[in-house]
Length: 121
Image 1 (cartoon, rainbow, N blue to C red):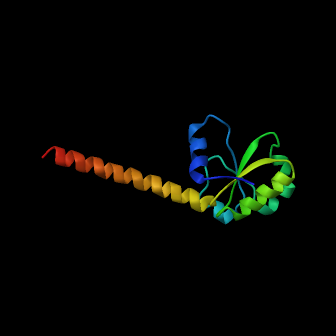
Image 2 (image 1 turned 90 degrees about the vertical axis):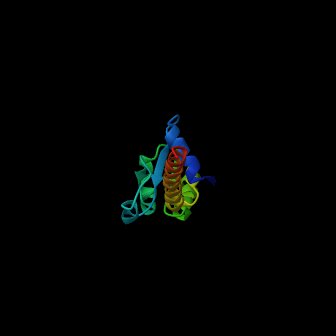
Image 3 (image 1 turned 60 degrees about the vertical axis):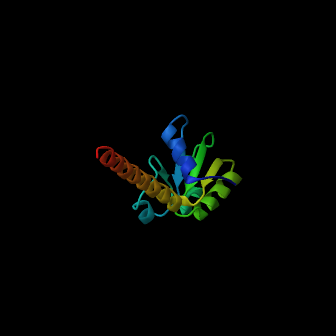
């Protein structure tokens, strides 16, 4: 099974050069807590009955909370001829990446303000 890190998937989405198909297999209440922009929500239990919604001619990135359920979905889809990659660490890794980015932005802003304050002394 192929895997991708949250940071790599985020970069692919940000770059916009290729179509990025993300399928979120979490439960409804989990999805309500946050999603990857543009992700299609198909609960893990619904994957077998909703195969017609997943294009076999395109690549898909699978995601869940921690990477375990999306890993099972990836294995199932691969066995049925789909081209898929599991996002390692799931939404936990995605949210951590988001928190780190926000923390770095705040840190850089503070450093910039301190530089200006000391420069003007």
